[in-house]
Amino acid sequence: MRRVKLIYNPFSGDNLMAQKLDDVIRIHQEYGYSVVPYRISFESTMDAAFTDINEGYEYIIVAGGDGTVDTAVNCMKNLNIDLPIGIIPVGTANDFAKFLGMSSDVLEACEQIINSDIELVDLGKINDKYFINVASTGMFTDISQKIDGNFKHSMGKVAYYIKGIEEVVNLKKYKIKVSTDEIVFDDYMYSMLVFNGRTAGNLNLAYKAEVQDGMFDVIIIKAKPFTNVVNLCIKIIKGEHLDKSEELVYFKTDKVYIECDEEIVTDIDGERGPDFPVTITCEKGSLKILGLNKSLKEHQNNK
Image (cartoon, rainbow, N blue to C red):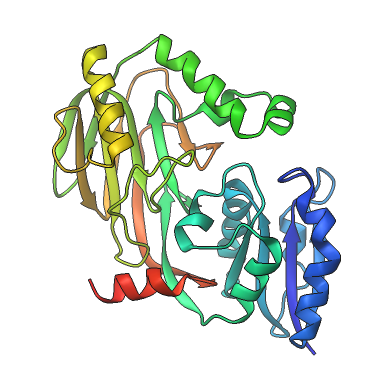
């Protein structure tokens, strides 16, 4: 029987994965797969999940949010494990899984993974660490780092919105220098996001991004008066902010170098990233994925 490694966070999504574990094993067995589960905890680290990986495994399932997937991908890269992964989105933030078109229903996601072909998708790398969805800095971008873990677990997405409102009240600008082959930005900004995916906190900010084009979608929100920020928010709601907005800079690139002397940190999918300066590169087709939504794949093939 073919083997599948299942790595799951039992605390994600109100313990949803722990409740659905037997169903996940059952549906895989119906398709001829033997599931080898690994439960992440403070005592059982992600590294240990891969100690038994060998040629007997078909693929790896990661059940959790963006941060859990990031950790798994970094472990795989460090250990030179080249197996495809499927994502079951059961975390607080599932932006990348949604970008791929993964179902929010655990059993439907399993069917989607099992009945799909392997696709190569892009990965981001900031200095020596990989990320799947977005690397960012400035206002709003490190909200997850500032939220108490227990509060986040009990309140879910509401915790992010509460913290976001707190930051809106105290707009703060930061001096930053961004260097790419396409553009150089040396000015004040509120926040900067380098997208491999499309959404952050369920906001469809980089709606022009593609998962297999080898390019990032970079958004820099300029330090403008509060009225401009309100105008930008309206454009974001309408999905028009990337077309004509004097409040931000938007461009595509495959490599970014960022310098900043301000007291701010970088964020990688909700976790703290490296200190400045940072180099962010897009590694085209660096990750093998299962479950990519067919309509998304066809859309990108037709571009």
